[in-house]
Image (cartoon, rainbow, N blue to C red; front, side, top):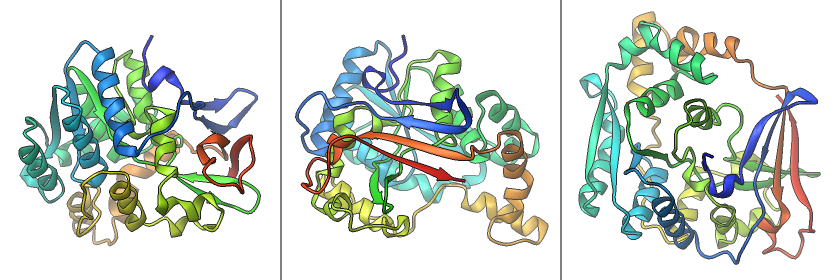
Length: 317
C-alpha cells in the first residue's frame, strides 16, 4: 500500500453523497509536537527508512524547496535534488538560487530539460493534464517532470495557516482539488513518493501553528486570507528553525513563458497563456462548488480560546 503521507493521514476527494463538494482531511496527532525543523528532519528520516529507492527532491527556486532541502541535509539522508530546466534558460532566474543552496550543502543535483513552449503548443500539456485530472497547465509540466524521474520523488508543498472566518476556520495553504493533482500522479501510477512534504505528518503540520508568528492566527485575530503574506510564511520558516531568507521576488518559474505568449498575442498579465492553455483544462475539469476542510482542533491547542472538536470550512466557489 502506498504511503503518500505518514500512515496516509491526509485524505482528499469528492464527497460521494455530495459530488460538487471536495473534502480534505488531516489526521490526528499521535505524539508531542516539536519544532518545525525537528519535525521535518524526523519526516526525512522516516521516509528514508521506509523507502528502498533513492530519494529525489524536486526543487524549484523558492523557500519551501530550500527548507525541505535543509531538512534532508540535516537528516543526513542520501538524496539527490532534481530541477526542471526550461529550454533557453526560461526559468533559470527561478531555479538558480536553490542550485547554489545545493552546492553549499553538498547535495548533488541534476536537471530534467523541457522545451516548455513545445510542451504547450504541441498539446502534450493537455495529454498529461487529462491523465492526472489536473486543471493547471503549469502543474501539468510538474507532472511531466515526475514521469521522467526514477526513485522516490518528493515535492515540498508548503505549511498552512488558520484564518478565522467568524464561524469557522479556513486553512490557507491546505491543498484543494487543484493541488491534490500531485497526489493523483502517485495513486494513478501506483508510485511511491511524497506529493506534499510539509503535510507529511500531523505533527509537522501542527508544529508551524505553535510558532510566535502564528499566535495571532490561532487566537482568531486574523480574519482575511490576504493578511497571510509571503513575509509571514518566511517568518514561519525562520522561527521554525530553517535558515532561509526571503527572495527578492516570489516566482512560479513560468513568468517568462507567460510573457512570451503575451508578447506574441499582444496581451498583458499572462492572459494569453491562460486563454490558450488554462481555460481548456478548467473546462475539462470544473472546480467543485464547495470545499470542506477537516483539521483536528488539537493542531490549534496552543490557544485557550479554541475548544475541542474539528475545524472546518464550507466555501462557495
